[in-house]
Amino acid sequence: MIREFLLQALTFVLPPQCLLCRDGPEWRHGLCQHCWQSLPVNHPACPRCALPMPRPLVCGTCQRRPPPFDRVIAPVRYQEPVDQMLCALKYHEQLAFGRTAAGLIVDWVNALDLPLPDLLIAVPMTPRALRKRGLNQAAFIARRIGRALGIPVPLGWVFKVRQTERQSTLNARERQRNLKNAFGCKKRLDGKRVAVVDDILTTGSTVSELTTVLKTAGAAHVDIWVCARTVDASSG
Ligand SMILES: [Zn+2]
Ligand SMILES: [Zn+2]
Image (cartoon, rainbow, N blue to C red; front, side, top):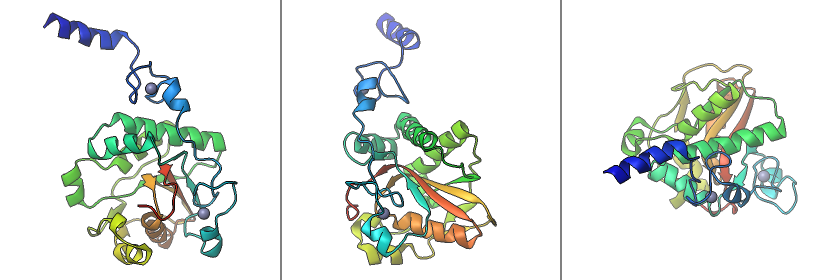
């Protein structure tokens, strides 16, 4: 009993420990200096879709078929330990990793010195999926970024109309068909600069569909802000 009390008291006095290794003191956005510096930074990458590349040149896919969005911001690659962090956030509700993910995006946006969007839109879930999982990790990350950069994060403007099959089981054409008319937007966004927020970008089919919906609603410019980019365009 006394031991428990003392341990609890210590957590208030001592600096918070690293979320990943639980070893070193927190240095930045929940991680110790060692873990922070060992993150797989996504550079160089395609300036359009953020696909990891040997040089920072527009990738073949974007050259052949430019995506509907204007630019992807993805500070890290979906590799160890980022995969662990984002799975912990998504499936085990370790919200603290949402702070790390948002912090990474904010630092990257600040470093690139990009013009800030007028609003952030989190990739929506259906109400049923949200009840089941209990957390929309994209909305959680978007709210934290919004607070840090002073950008509004309107909830409910963009919604998911119907449940779609898990994208990871489908090929590119099936993905597109699966997502057709999956999203809706209930506001006009004429002339607005929008950034769509999610945790991971894989093939980009979800955010492409969402971008088309936002541009149809009048958005002038749509960027995609995610924490991590998968290394291989065809994986997941
Ligand atoms: Zn650490
Ligand atoms: Zn590309």
